Length: 121
Image (cartoon, rainbow, N blue to C red):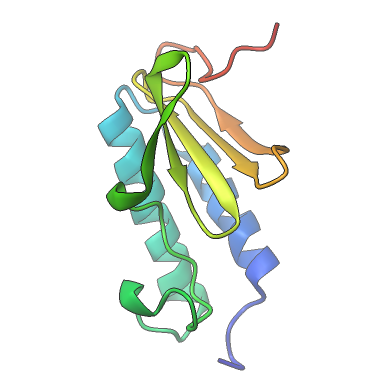
């Protein structure tokens, strides 16, 4: 819709709010934080109704979905979720990492234990 805030601004606001939250302790908590935060940003900054079945055409950003859940080779403690333009990785400890489809890290947040999903070597 023409009244919507540009997508890049909405993504930046989502990442800002996600970073400001207390670190998650579990993968389930991290997954929930992502969903609640992104839905709140979209509800506030777009006029587009939350209708996930229209994700391909409505221009709204939607959180990762369980049907897009994938294993990460060699990492039984990390789950990947494929979205239209990103991959979201969530570790059992609540750590989050979001990468664009070229593999560039656009967001990383440690779990409550202070550990990242993919520690820097």
